[in-house]
Picture 1 (cartoon, protein in one colour):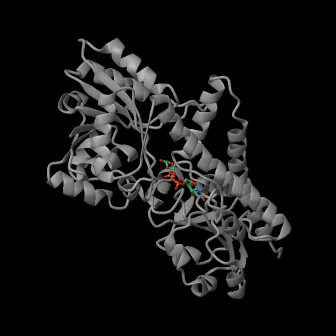
Picture 2 (cartoon, protein in one colour; picture 1 turned 120 degrees about the vertical axis):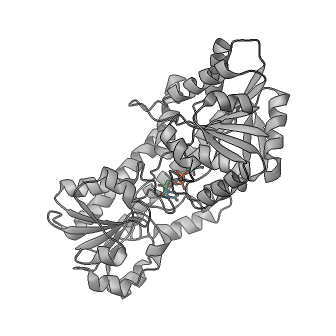
Picture 3 (tube, helix red, strand yellow; picture 1 turned 30 degrees about the horizontal axis):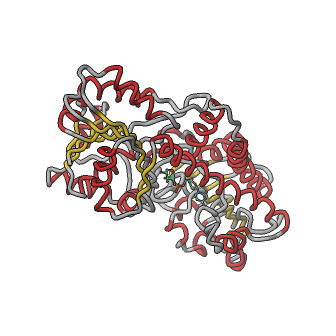
Length: 435
Ligand code: UDX
């Protein structure tokens, strides 16, 4: 099929590359002409394992191209995916200006039947607004359909998530739209949930909010573990073996970040309020996530006592491993709070240092974890990169001024660390020992 994807951000590029890989002809559109020029030369603006290779090989086969002309893309494609950003406004509401703008541009450039599919995460009833907008701006009596097809991919494993999804959700209002989307996704051979448009939009917000609430739940349990000397990792294991609960997303830590959970929770709380429902459960999940950072800071203070003039080595900046994304990363807030108290900050992250340099000041970046450790009063772990799990800890211990590791991602075993002679503090791993 001839497909256009409007918006060449995370979701747009991964979706475009994967649809091309499945044999479709894809036009990726973005109004950032610098980004489009770069993409045409093979410069991929984000780090996502496997994405560059997929784009380059499909560009070679002429199955993917990049343009800043929405007119050209709409003219050439029967199916148009909208994958533009839906950032948060100050009140938490999703900003749908980008979606409205694309809908208008599709309407004025449409020459024949088009299926317009929302891929971006949007509040319930956005599809109805997109339909209304296209109707208002369309020039001739051209038929079209609007559909919702939310994307569930996770950064760092986006290609695998796209190619092997747990389910594909399609919200449609006509058989034609259903048939087009079903045949587009047929090669993936995944379970398909076909609903109305409002339900599909709700599936996305409800899924992300549920996962965020699951993380906040285990973070709250971790607080209790610390008070009574229990181990949250064992608690999560014991809970997770119950098939109704599942072990995934029960890792206690410094809280969730990234471009989706914080924003989607805000938007879901806001749209619920607008519809006359106070979603207090989600407000509590959001509050726990916020408190988790203060809780971690207190752990650092409990060990170091005075923060001023201490050199703190930060292992990891990215909001999670295998990405260079630092949007709403808990690490940023924690670093700024430590700087406010007078700490000297050194940082090492395998991928996110360049992005970190854009937003952090008065920090030193190191070339690896060993260079980072030299002369630090303690290390704090903010991201669970695999390479941190394989460090030569005896060497790290020698390089540190004091053998202290405060682990916001629970990547080490407390007993093992104690044996190695570290003062090791995790999240919910038992009562923290005081020095
Ligand atoms: C999320 C959803 O998983 C995905 O389906 C949706 O399409 C986009 O939002 P993403 O933001 O890429 O994906 O990352 P995810 O792996 O879900 O992690 C989100 C945050 O939760 C990270 O900060 C991560 O560190 C944190 N997290 C995750 C935990 O703190 N504990 C866990 O057990 C799992």
